Length: 471
Image (cartoon, rainbow, N blue to C red; front, side, top):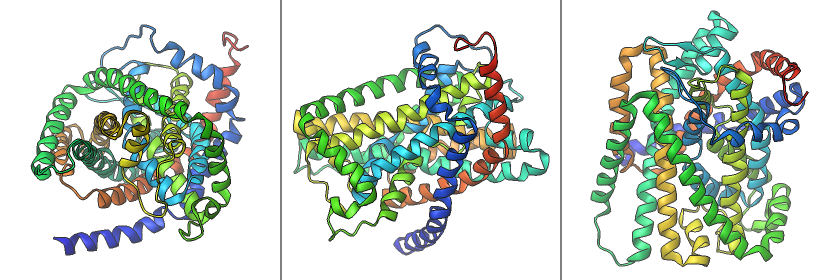
């Protein structure tokens, strides 16, 4: 078995090196830059308007008809998938392997990613369709077919194949594996000499997650929206509050932290030390990779959720795309990095760190045991929400390729992968998820570039309306 896994890891490593090479990073960030220029920096110019019309309306009463969910439920479903273990484990990987400067490149990716995610949500609503059940369905495959034209339909199929497979990795196995890892870390913190059989525990956790996910997704888009709109705010508030308290405790070191980030972005060895040997290319790659993995701007996953919204205006739903990236990367990812750096814990650059880094950082305030417990809870909630969000993405991709009858078999396999993921070697799962992320992004980015003129026109027309409150 180990020999087979070694072969899989070697093949995946070769593909990953191409998929996440410099050309791909340029394409990802470059698409965001191009959209930003074409829309004249919409995410910056209209940031106040965006917050007012997203988080400002979060608690307003919203209604949704049959086969659709409210705009807020749509964004929490998308956030459920994006706000996951990438916000903790992913940031830790970037920080330890790319140095503090990787946080800067994560920010750059997010700032331009706001334009990308906005465009994805706009196109998702503009080109969506109703399926046989009357549900709104949309995403890259639909705006490729209905926007670029049927001659490009093959590109939509390519996206769906990679998307359906990626859902098993980034949206399932990796997430469940992180739950078991976090719980194990917490148990060891409380009982270092424990003789517990973690193999059995992992299996039990996998079964419990599988049951919860199965019950939720079988209930359809409505139930999924109801669960995520409750789960996402709760888990975000708990984690944000905890990190802010730790940062405030170490507020005197925050100036040094930002210096490490900005200097490390261009001279990583000046921060991590020459012996570690972190090159600027490595720093940028890890920052961009983990930024994209976390906020998913450009991957084409989130527009599948946004397409289910009851919102009729593409631009209004697009604003939630900007909010989504801001919340995920600028707020939550930043808090993870700042908390670790400000706390003064030993980071150990050059070797991929685990969740114990953030646990130890929180432990400087509450003790290592409580820190491990809080991180176990946070990661479990983050990961669980991601599994739910990606279950929708995988089902929609499968439905597009094989038709409605394929949904139930896909759901069964997806639930079964929850159990497999609980016992899988996590490092290999991360690597495969990375590769699939890059592959599914390519068709989507081609569509975004091809339809950028449509996004620009729709946006311009919306803000020119006389009844716009900014006029």
